[in-house]
Length: 305
Image (cartoon, rainbow, N blue to C red; front, side, top):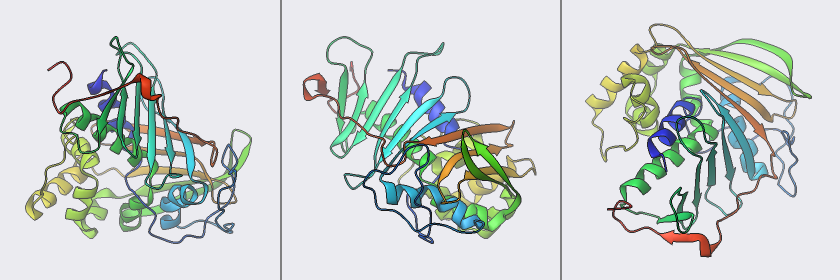
């Protein structure tokens, strides 16, 4: 299992999304993305243009209504696929990265009873890390899945968007065969950082802030137990300074029912870093647990240790 490659790809892609739950206006669409919501509760139909908070909350609102979605994440190299399901209560995730010149395929699941990682070694193909495992590889994989979830759950981006963002464009545009409105949002990150609760922001978005501020995609893999006010202030401002005075650019493609079909973000730190997410199978995406006979339970020691 190439953990470093997995974390690096996830960290790069997670520049797109940071957040873990909708806390704003619940009035969003009941459309079906590229799939349909079989049996899922539907949110009321959205009418009129969306505000910045509504754009930031659109994925969370639809996920709450439809219970699952499959997302393709493209950044550099082969795209990753992230499936999120809330049918069993707490969000469950599946991350798949195809093999490329940097390593073999990656397949990681986070289910209610623990973390499952597909290994490239002989024997049973899956290794299970129970919830709370101290195994370093399990902890890194858990961080990777946290980043994957952050790519999808968008509502906490609202604070950054509303503190420093403006809707700079709004035009009709198709995503595949679907009619959407393409919103362009420009965010003055330095301005936003001065307005928001910096300690809360740094703590909540630790991996994102560390990656942008330091240029090290692995720096935020494990968050410290405590972050002081002074550390948070310094890191948040370093994060903003890394933008070089240029705005971050967010783009949303949302249909008339408020369903997101595509999302991109470009951060100008060090060099332009752009990630693109496309959404499919709203309400029909599935996560399949591995068969029990194909799973080995890991100890709290590193594999092979």
